[in-house]
Image 1 (cartoon, one colour):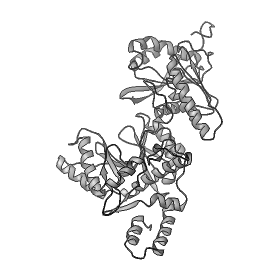
Image 2 (cartoon, helix red, strand yellow; image 1 turned 120 degrees about the vertical axis):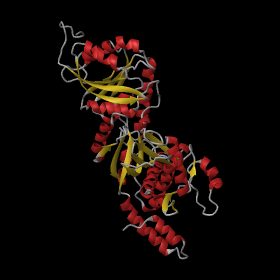
Image 3 (cartoon, one colour; image 1 turned 45 degrees about the vertical axis):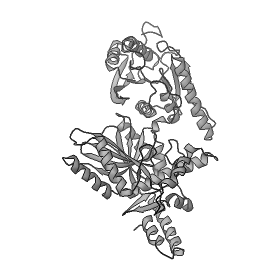
Length: 490
C-alpha cells in the first residue's frame, strides 16, 4: 500500500504538531515515491499519418514497448515506466505526446446535446486524474532541470515549465529535489491537483491578481482541446471542448486560458472511441532540427519515417537530389552516422538554407561536447545531370515537387521521367533502393512505366502532407545495366 501525498498534506497540515510527524511522513513518502516514479503509464503520440507502424517499430526497438495503433489514423499508444519518459521525447517518429488519463473503446454517447453535456460533467468528476497529473509534473521538471544545467543565466523561454524537444536530463534522483518538484500537489475536492509556481515574469506579475485569498493557492491555467472524427455525434468539437472544459474547471477550480495555459487537457473522439489525456509537448517534436524553413519544408518526423523504410546500412551512400532545406539528410546523419549522406538542389537559396541548418546542428552537437563533424555534404546541382559516377549510390530518398507550391503539374510530366532515369543511372543495379514522396501520383506512375523496367515498385505508404493525400513510393533498382556500352546512358 502506498501513501499518497495528498493524505500527508491533509493529515499533517491540519495538525498542531507538524514537526517530527510531518518530516517523518515526508521521509516515508519520498521512499515510496521513488518506487512510484517507475510505475507504468500509457503514453499517446501523434505520428505522421501512414507511418503508424513505422513509429511502433521505433518504440519497440528503443523502448522495448509494444505500441498499439489507434483506430484513428495518426496515433499510437504504448505503456512505459516513468523512468523512460526522457527517452520517449528522444524518439524520432513522434510529433506530439500526451499521457492518457482514461481510454474508452466503446463510449455510449447520448442522443441529445443536453444529455451529452451532463455526461461530460459526470465524466470529469470520476476520471482518474492523479497519475496523469503526476506524470505531467515530472515531465515539466525534466525540462526545467535541463534548462538550469545548460545555462547559468537562463532566459525567460528556458524558465517556462514546458517540455523541450531536445531534453538530455534525467528524472530527479535526489530526495530534496524530488520533494521540491512534487510539493505543489494540492487537494481539490476528492482529487489531487498539480499546482506550480509561476515560472516567467508575466505570470509573476499576475500572481497576486489570481491568487485565492482564502487558500493562498494559485490555480492552474488550462484549456481543453477536442479532436473529433465521426458522423454520428450530436455535438461538434467545439461543443465537446466547451462542455467538458466547463466540467474540468468546476471540478479542479482551474482558470481557463486558451493561450497562456499550464495544462492542456486533450479529448480525442473517434466514432465511439474516447481518449482523455494531458499534453506533454507544447510544440511538435518534428521541429527539432530545422531553423531555416523553406516554402515546402518536410516535417522531420515524416523524413525519419521515410528513412526507416530504406533500412540504411553501415557505409551506405545515401543521396537526396532535391533536398530543399535538408530535412531528410539531417534526420539521416543524426540517426545513421555510419552512412554517408549527399544532398543537393538546383536552387541556390535552398542549398543555403540546408547549409545553415547543418551549421545549427553542428553548433548544437559541439555545445553538447561532441567535436566530430557530420557525414554529410551539400551541393548545388542539376537534378537531371548529377555529377556522380554511375552505379555509385545505395539509396536515393527525396521529396519530389508536388506541382502545387513548387513547380507545376505540367512541368512534372517532363521532369519525373528524366529524374527517375538519372536516379537509375547513379543507383547500384540489383541492390539500390529509392524512397520517393510525391502527391502527383498519376504523373509519377506514368513516368515509372516509361523508363523500361529500371525500377520495380515494392510498396506504397499513403500519407497526409499538409492536408494533401500523397504517396511514399518504395522502389528497388532492377539489375538492368548500361546500354550500348555507354556508362552514362540506358
